[in-house]
Image 1 (cartoon, rainbow, N blue to C red):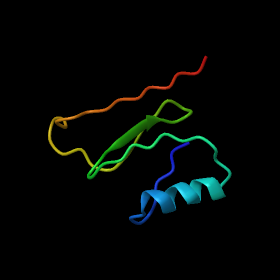
Image 2: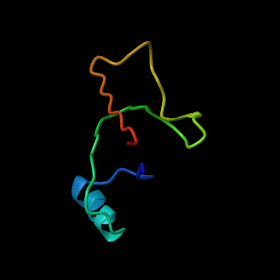
Image 3: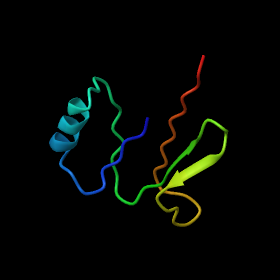
Image 4: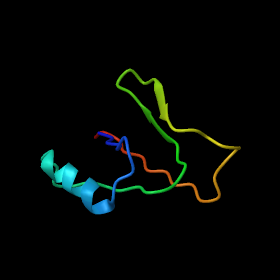
Length: 67
């Protein structure tokens, strides 16, 4: 699941909101203007945020695979 705040939140407030939703584990990827991409259950590419130029100076990729 991907959870994104609609407004700027402090790390503490966002963490508390996740806890209030019943989440006990999370991975935080913080940054400024970021793009997030994932594949939905049908395999279609989804994107949130904009891609500015060909790449970012520090790109991070995290890939989860089902076993």
